[in-house]
Amino acid sequence: MAFKIHPRGERPDWATPAPDALPVGTDERAYAAIRRLLGGENADFLAGKPLVDFGRWTQTLRLLLAAHDEGGTEALTSVYTSLVRSDEGLALLMTSDPASRRKSWKMRELLTADFPPPEFVVPGLLPTGLSILAGRPKLGKSWLALQLAVAVDSGGELLGVRVPQGKVLYLA
Image (cartoon, rainbow, N blue to C red):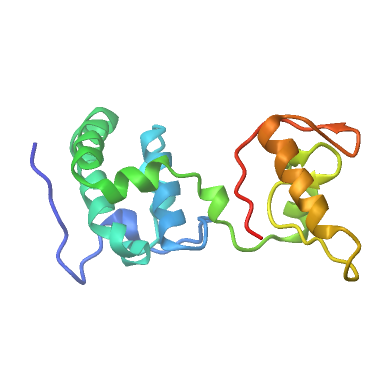
């Protein structure tokens, strides 16, 4: 199978401008484009999108599009498989979740998003993540933190609530 790489300055017909709703960053754009190609979609969705907009993934997309032009989805899948095996960065890109890299939301997206329920260290009381235990001096904050650590380590109770067992690192 032969691949034709277009020289700099020349744009193939699939790279002529037309607005498209691709994600903002180059990694997100490349992820979306590769997923769409692998899903069997025609390369027309890239019409008008200069390949240089894909940053470090430009050459990869050129190879995939050339394979698609030469032999369709089967050739594309074959080239993609060999590229993923040889390029750890591409494998990481394609196995990562692009939604986790999201940096901003539009109000409509935020209101309609389906978020998983929060995870709790102490059900209904202390969620996983960063928490601040604050109060005046000598009220028992350190003792409460120590009791929390022991309850999580042993899978016991804290303030009458059963705590699932977990790993603890207590620094005081």
